[in-house]
Length: 205
Image 1 (cartoon, one colour):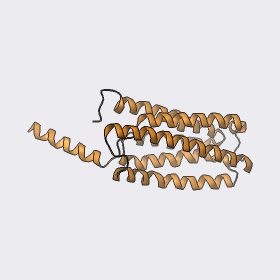
Image 2 (cartoon, rainbow, N blue to C red):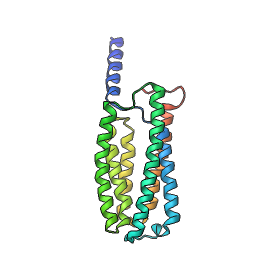
Image 3 (spheres, rainbow, N blue to C red):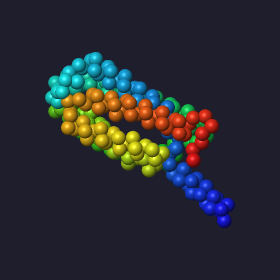
Image 4 (cartoon, rainbow, N blue to C red):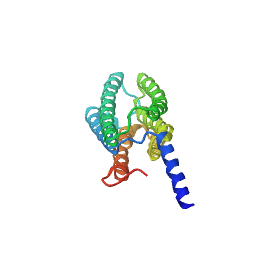
């Protein structure tokens, strides 16, 4: 009887894994967090008024900030992809399958909606609301996509949503919230996931 239960448990785990993209690397989170912190440091140096509590920004600053944000996002995306690809290759798991497509779709929709709102905020020179908007929509994207990957992703999503909600009440300090949410929390999450799933002699259970 115990053997049959163990067999059923193993079959259930295999079926659950087949529907989830489990090759996300903890090093991807760490690298993305480092890129975010570098971007925040550059923004703090380049736009010193970002930490002065201002909500309305001149359009010229919005354009420069948008360019910096795009570069930071691209660097984080590329580094995250590289580490995830290396883990997929190491474990012999295809990086592009049904689970990966569902994960991409369910995270992309909230992020694209948030991106459209961010562009509108920048057009209206409401740059102080950009950081909380990014945090909120990114958090929703993670929670929405978590059912197609490792479940721990949803906790990172909850954290981003909470930070975004708090930042809505303190819009003039968005750079600090942005650096903490996208930088520090990604690094913490990455270390946690690496220790749990990728550390030598550990296997996904």
